[in-house]
Figure 1 (tube, rainbow, N blue to C red):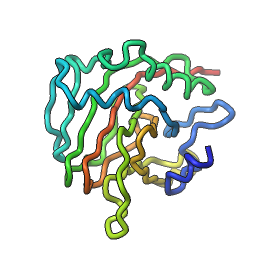
Figure 2: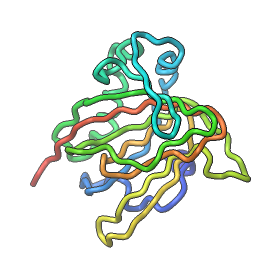
Figure 3: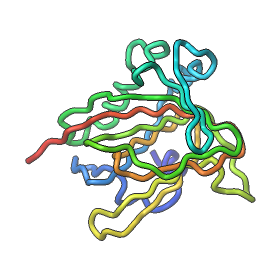
Figure 4: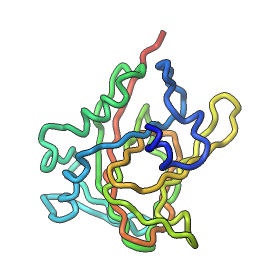
Length: 198
């Protein structure tokens, strides 16, 4: 876990789901998915997918109705992985909603946005590793901004793009990608959730 934590920058004290099972209003959880390479073929063939170009120039691809890519994960291992990472916390249910895979050609980006409405969580799995540049240290990084639920102050985090790393966050967390200096690939999956109430 310590090695994984060293991949991230910024103050994440209020971002992590509590070890006591509490779920704050705004949260982020970090993990690693070892079988990330299973999703790379999504970029090689059309496999019956649709696509469009986003505002920042990134290319989104997806199955009709944003259905899960069973063509690369028939047994839904990634969905089970997400639920397993969140199992220690007080979620009553976590149900798949939609997903897409996104390629950022050089010099493209994603503006800050959220995944709303409803109680939603989103997971971003990086499918390749982006080299760091001393003269442009933000290039290709994921920026997350949210609010400390106790003090109300804004807190932010920068996430390096490392193959297999997964960021799971509440849909209310603003996030975006700085312009990248090399191609960047990710798999994004949204889930609807309900929480246990005392």
